Length: 298
Image (cartoon, rainbow, N blue to C red; front, side, top):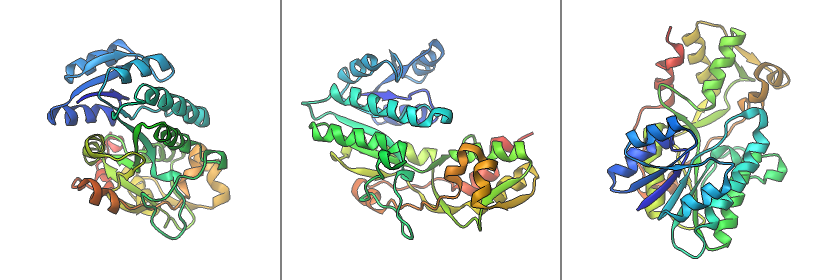
């Protein structure tokens, strides 16, 4: 297949490129800069110039492909809601070029869009509406609208994606701990975040592209839930700072925008994904990667 990848120069997208090429696919990567274009060429991909706000560039890239993997997202959390709405428009633009064909569109979301108190979130769980205070659900709402128009759209929900360089939202927790000189968690710290290694994530995108079903949701979850207390303990050791508990009332002031996420208990399962696509995570877990994180190096 000739696959158009957005976010192709990012943390996940750059790892997807060799996965696709090694499986025999051709890759067209979206690049907004000369440096990005050079990195794509070096990786063996073709270059399509544009960005997430240039909807025509997205439409033309999708139109020239046999399938699309959309993993770009603007992670400027100071304008999180606006970025989520921009993602909605990007997905609609990509999908509009695929209407009337059987070409797949793979959309990226997060396991955090699902709230299932006292049980694991599964692929069958619908996202909480964006109008109910979960802006990130805009991506899945756009995906559903593409399915209704006949586009073979599926969703990959990501937990905390990690290696020794980055660890999802935990990278931001490390920055807060370094600034405040304490590593904090909320309450008893027993709330859980699911996780997956970067190198386990990329095969799932390929499998969803090759075998995914319209309207399906897939969970890139290797570990169903790592307690935040355990994460805070590792950060404390890595930075040599005290580990402390913050009340829910203190969380917003201490963590800033992260305060919304840090106290959330959001474990998730990937049992259905593994059964349907034959995906098997095998890489290092979150805590071992975090213990050797580059952010702790002198």
